[in-house]
Image (tube, rainbow, N blue to C red; front, top):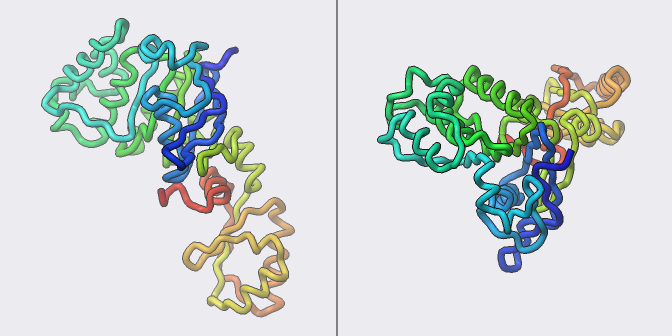
Length: 309
């Protein structure tokens, strides 16, 4: 099937600053692509170009097989956008807000249909100013679904939601994909990306530095498992000796008093670590093994945790 969205050699310059550099992206029907990146990586600029909010310096954007620049109004009629920060008139009720958004499109669902989908029936006639942050977020998600879009741009869609509400949104978006519609997702929740994304693209310094399914990225970048080690006492000299004798341990990242490193052969590598530590009388206090995650991929590729962004 042809891509719903296809960007080729996309560039954006601000004076001498190259914010986005020859970037290629595509989203196919029924696919969710998670675009992840540190602050200043070019992620927001990329999304704004794809949404038609910024003009690329060079490159092409096609949505539904049509050039965005020449068919902007027609394309915007069939996409939904949830911005990272949304400000709506809070004196309107939930129903009035959704009716207002429905009036912007030639075809839309009714306000009551969206209210039911968002599980807001008991809040339908409540003003936005009296809703909780999580309830308002559900209204905002509802606004970008009102026109039954074929392509969704979701920037931090579950921020402020409690775990149950997050899962409600996840289930809704899974249904959206089953209808062969596409999603471009940005999120700081790595579990959200792993649950929803069919593919992940990591952007840094204006370029895509890694792309693939969550499982492919985890396996190829980090290995299947991550080892966490804490020593009885901090001893820089013995730690240096340990890193000198175990090449793979040199890749360990220190988090407070714990060292974290991805491993590919659990039994052999743990045995090697314990044996070397024992030989130099460097006592291991705690040892924990967990499955690697997209958070580990992001940290290894960008040098920063997504939670720090």
